[in-house]
Length: 137
Image 1 (cartoon, rainbow, N blue to C red):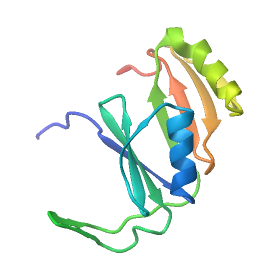
Image 2: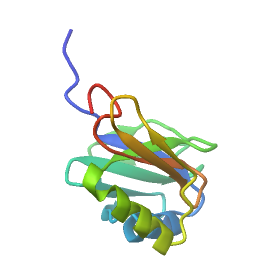
Image 3: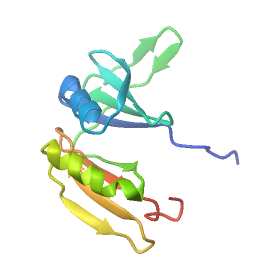
């Protein structure tokens, strides 16, 4: 069987793309790769892409010059985790507080990693996690 080499895209569905983009850029430091009325693609450290889709705007096939993208959509709070360095954990806590983002919980994992959880403007549960949370990270 061929193997996968990485996970490159994660999609979240949002009520207002501009509000979501401001949060992810201003609070988490992500950069816009491309944006239109339907979605925004954000760069995550030059290695991954976070896609923010306007909820309900991708329920029809999207036709591009190179092909088509089948319909997709989502509802309800989704979860996404972002890797951080352990030494940066306190700085992230301070940055979230400075931006009025409430930390919902902290977890110290058995393998030595740590996580902190908070929500974005659409209620998605976001996690910042350090090495040691998973066997693979």
